[in-house]
Image 1 (tube, rainbow, N blue to C red):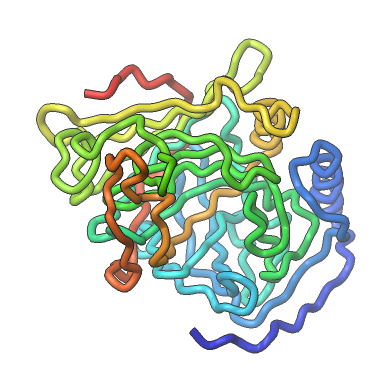
Image 2 (spheres, helix red, strand yellow; image 1 turned 180 degrees about the vertical axis):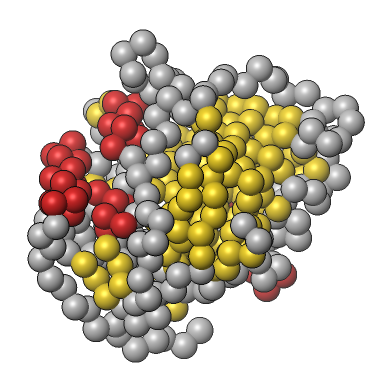
Length: 345
């Protein structure tokens, strides 16, 4: 794709009380190591930032969506639409859940991003990835964007654990998925690999997650048939001290007969470079993390969906050109946590 001209940033100090509170929270998370930047908290302005509309999260309320202008530095992002309450990302599209009525054409403010209170809660939603095969990645994830003080090289405060736009922060992937693979992953800000659960992927000499099989999950599979929409529940249960105990993932298709669900958990123990990952992610969730929807493709995504060393993954090769133009996310609900009672069928 052609490289877009550089965005001209306008930065200024923000003095409103609520923004000062957000700045203080950002500095707190810097101290905890949940975001990584030494920049001041500022507002970024970018030509083309778009506001596709709002959606309802049952049990929480209205959230606006704010679309990214840059996919990666120098490469324009794709579009994301809201159609009858459904979030529809197109290839290279990325959108951020935001405070109602906060999206302003062309402007980005970190404190406008939603800090969804998910610690001790669960998020339910439905995704339709039909047609999104090998080399496609339909993603819904959380990062500490609201607290990130760095504007980032994408000019919108975007941060993640893989430093895509030059700013690192804690990241929790609720799903990175297509019809042949599903991964739910916890990341500290400097752990691009993280620890995860689900199914699919690998390479020469290594395998990615194998909690399920291709007979359980995939097109025409007996439990979760990815030709159809999938209802997802991601939970963040806590112990008596308010500490995260795991991230739970439950996929269901209750309209089908027979095996209709798959479950897994990750995060009982997570240590990275001598640090307690669960303690850090407990703090990130307690501060409120921003949900992000994105959809992208690549001819080398076998880490996600490849067969792996054991040959048990779903994809022999990836073909980004075969990915459909869009996927869907809808029917969001924020509720009380529950540990999945199901086992692999």
